[in-house]
Amino acid sequence: NLVGLSRAALEAVLADLGQPAFRARQIWHWIYHRGATSFDEMTTLAKGLRPELAKSCVIARPTIASEQLSGDGTRKWLMNVPGGGAVETVFIPEEDRGALCISSQVGCALTCKFCHTGTQNLVRNLDAADIVGQMLVARDTYGEWPSPSGNRMLSNIVMMGMGEPLLNFDNVATALRIIMDNEGISISKRRITLSTAGYVPNMARCGEELGVNLAVSLHAATQEERAALIPVAKKWPLDQLMAACRTYSEQTGRRIFYEWTLIEGKNDSPGHARAVGTLLRGLPAQVNLIPLNPTLGYDGQPTHGEAARRFQKI
Image (cartoon, rainbow, N blue to C red; front, side, top):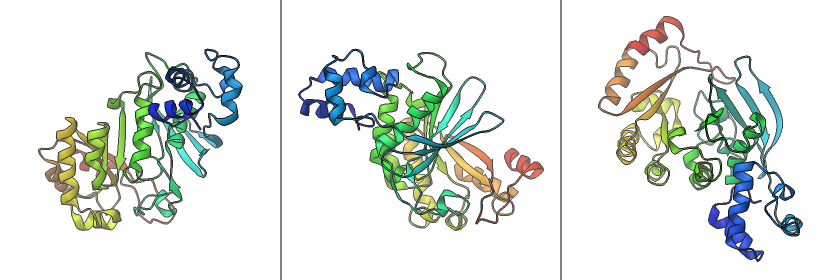
């Protein structure tokens, strides 16, 4: 499968087939700028070469198992990915642009208490083809081929789908480099956000190698309360997480987005609001307050109304 290969890996595959390096640049352009799904579409390749490539290579992308469209324009796909398994991908629109929420794993091993994906077993890491392929299918849906140079609906990427991206860092990094490449999909790293539940070991590496925006699932301002919601906090406690966040901001010069799911009676009191303010004081930060989305298997309820507004004000 040529989808998901780095430039160097694509050149190596074609070299093994006796093709010069410039063929890789041509094929890269067709897959990631033009959205080609077959070699027959690649009219800059010699006619005799196209069937030869098709004998040993494919351009495989996910297939849509089901699709849901909300009244507000939000679109959710269940995709069968080339490497096996199914994942969800979600497009969240704004007036003239939108964010594509991409998955990094089939299932998840972190078992965060309020997360529905956490109730599923981890089946496998997605490879780069599975990750990039979600973007390709979304662009098929919205007709964004060739890659638009100006306004585009699929303007932002958020690695916030199923799975923990930093537990699949190599494949996620390869996929994001492809998405950022300015001769293809060409989405700036400033428009890409990677969300982590707090897997500390790969945070610095993410800053050094990718430099994208970082979102951290915080949800509590004390170690005890956070560990009760997010089991990975038992291994990588809050003080280590915050030290890694400071390092990330120093590496990239960017503020970090801290996700706070408001759960009634759990983390939504004025005391909780003051605690998170104290925790983040002096850091370049933005707190995203999100009322809990109720799921089967978790009895928490979302915080709405005056309690949510009070928390936000504090």
